[in-house]
Length: 595
Image (cartoon, rainbow, N blue to C red):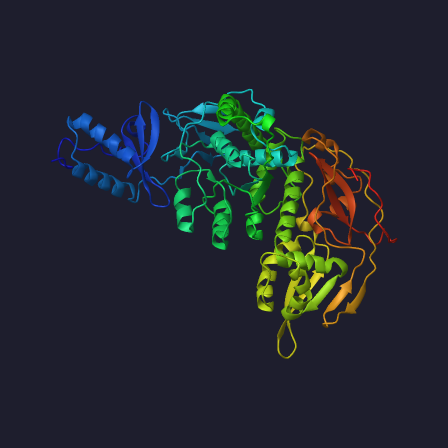
């Protein structure tokens, strides 16, 4: 029987860092989470296997058989594997991180091709190259498939021809998400694909996954529990959830943690309905719409797959070029401010000029955020009713019971879930406060009177500039003068009154909080650099410093200029300077964008 004292012993671990360990045999190590692994070196190529895996057992069985002349018994092999696993976890053995598909180390990005030669691509500021033994440790989970060897010569138009997304802003966000997914550093936004039936959402999901993290496993739906989600995440890098019809509060929270917490993963989901209804999750999402495909343009799945496989090496090289460009530009990328997904926004901004003009990404990203806020308000009965209530008033103060009475007529005209009681309204109002705050409506609470009644104060005020969308992108971005801003402020006249319920209100007849609106003017991203999108290059530095985002619109701001992105014209506003603008009346027409 084979044991440690016989001459047929299983190969032992060479001293860490020894030449013998690098050339032959294997070296044990463990991860910070306490998992045992072995680096196996065969013909100069290193493979990394979990000690408890079937792949390591098979390798060990063959190696022992070559030394001993016979295969060990199943019981002895199990005992020896357990012994090696214990040794790997002992103090003094190396501790290393392991990675799935992509890794970031020492200022470079590594992409595992998952081929039989265990090759990877090393991406640096100076370009990219193939390597057999990267300094990081990659592991392979069942189902992971090989990427092709990248080949130069790709075009972004080739990718455009393979996806059914005609909206230019959505396509920019899609490319930014792909570039970020290959950069395994920091959090990743969730790509939410929506569209009616027949828009080939599942096909698009399959293409995107095959482009950067192919797998032999078919697409699956969202797991039912958080535990099932955690298990699925451990089996692959890119997480794709097909035909999602709804998200519970618990699953929304789990996806938030998966997007920005430790061990963050790139995720995309698709569905017909607006599945993201919670503000904290919406802040972490990119919303992209798939187009209906006319019959004359529809391709068979076989033809689409063939077209994709032909273009795959060039498309992968195109993304690698963008990664290299991003590493080169990152040290000089200095946005004026960053949104919630700061790591993603900074990285996408650094990479953008490999494909788009400077300023393109931030413009479309902030427009996407504004659209998401509008969707959240439209699909939330309380948020929608409060916004309508604040159209002709500046403030409202009262109890939850009085607010319930005030909003009941609006609720009666709505379908879906509306508050059933003042208590229910108070709970839902706290949830609605986040999207309302982004359009300038604030909700505050305080105690009042001998009975310590909880009083709600709702105000429509301009929000501060720290969260305004940054227009300046990099220190080396080209400048262009913006169109002249409007010189006439909105009317600032207001009057206070008390309604029949005793609620204090301040009327504001000429203004209402609003979200960004679309215009009919059409520009391509290449024209964006000439549309005056960068506030830091505006003719009036004071006005530029006062510019705020489209979701901060109310009576105290005026239209400054518009940014043309794709088929949309995105308005940029600035706070009124009352010391310089005394007159009141309707805003003067602007010279940028379409009316």
